[in-house]
Image (cartoon, rainbow, N blue to C red; front, top):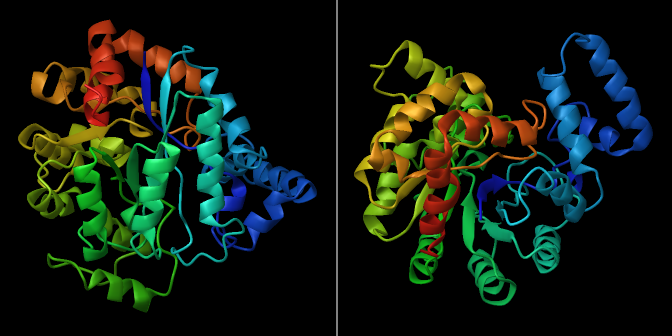
Length: 355
């Protein structure tokens, strides 16, 4: 039984209307608009299907399939029948990128229904501390709908040590629920509100921040810095936390060329998962770049690290980067059965609290 510990199946109606500029989200949702914009983007850069424009196109293309079931079915065919999938929804209502057409509760209800159809679905609840009665929603999802953990996405505008999250962490710790936290910088999914409000949100930082002449992406990366979780783990020592994306392709590349850089998130996460019993990381998105396979294999030769790394693909966010089937097969062949068994079977069971 394999585990893919990081996939998405949310729909285009779960994405805010102003997520893309020039009302492109609304236009791309229509059949005619999608056809026209696709042709325009292809003319902008006709020689590659891996540029940013094409990523957005394929993001919307999958998201507009009509149901989470259809999106999930496109993913699961690339894996053995008994594969288990941790499915992570997205609550983008508070990123100030316009209206989200579908209420978050409806996304969660549909995900719950997907689990009834496909028992191998392991749903997590995306928790944003700004949502009212979020603890009540979590309790209902866990106790009535079989949800098995929570997802955090701090670049949307909050720190993981936000006091509103502490009742959530307490409930998770008491009920053996793990946490998957987005942990890569410079992602296009981040707080889109006014700069003044963003700086006000950042003023709640427990460590000094340099905000002068910084881009919005850099500013939002401060929310998800892996060292922020030291405050959380000190207060909730039994809480299992996974740093999604292992710091990002950006920091893996930096490590290869500048291995002594102290502020490299790759190095920070590597050290933290080795030092703290309940810290983990997953390789979703980042390891879709095959040039990092060798570095991963070296990491897995260290037993401490080998027990803390989880397999994940980040479907369908990386649909433009590599074929889902090729990613799993190529990685498994490269690192070998022993290491793949660790990251895709043994470690996920421990992380989920089932072993």
